Length: 488
Image (cartoon, one colour):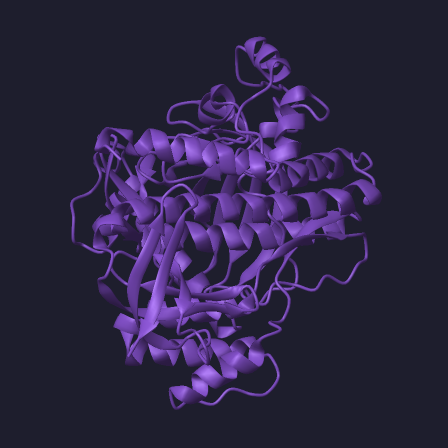
């Protein structure tokens, strides 16, 4: 395949994979007609909307992100406590329930991020402009307010509507380098008075919140998701997309905001869509992995014990910790969306060690978050929920199914990209770790490039977490297949 065809071929593979899995890569004529009639962002002069434009809001996201869903700011709350505010774009103010645009979002339920292209849940005129919290733009938002104690715990929380302005669009890598003192202040940090102090304050609070979460059993996992590197339209490499301090800051705030949102809806007697991760069914294999490393875990699932084990392994062998993390992630299983009716008893999220958890902070990218936003606005206005429990239960199943389909499409295109890179390396041998083992087959991931393939020979007797030596025997770019044979 000629190099100039790489991006186009991967995009075509992504489109076919989406269609095969019931995802729509294109917007219908009805959606395009609706979007043509939307010319400005939503406005609402309800006096109950808090005017928060004066606060030093900023966004931190990927370098190339334009679909900005949330902003954050920190303020003293008296004594040693801090107030953290998270503003979430009011997408519902533009995307009305039952509209054609809403129908497309309800069909796909998520944006699909592939190695070649992004297939957005909402038209880009909205998600990257009119419903995005872009720099310098005045926007309506749902604001999650949290009071954080000196120990990093959320002491109280509230949700209300607000009017905000993003004073600085910042990127993860540049902010992380500056916080770690390995790079200069990003230009906007240097240009906006007080923003440097504001970000350091947010970072300090986030670190306390993170430490508190892990004390209660939230899992410290570090997987290396590969991201494509293009030279023009030529695929040049796949590199691990690693965590950093700025990413963790935003992650800490979003987890807390989602927890506060779930509790807020419950307190208002509203149903909600919860994001749950049940106790792992393959806990015994996690126990075996720990035993193989000289550690002991209890026979029944225990998040705190698992987190203590993970922390010890990160300190003892940081270079191999991502491999252990990947094994644990595979054995934990997948999260799902479920209906939580008023007064319900949700299963909670094992990996985050929380009982009350929803998805609410990315309504431009995920349909469950847009549903949650509508539930919040109804609760704030004293109206009944805009969805019945029967509808919410069906939507929970739909969102879980389509998220799984989107994950499979993204994984297939990553594998097609990996097959492109490895096509000329048939016969080479690699060190690998087993990432999957079931009746459907056995899979292993090599470290460089960080790609996964099926072990088609010599897979007998190996399980998730085992280290093996494999030989590349076949690639199929169109189908995203990479086949390995286990060797001695």
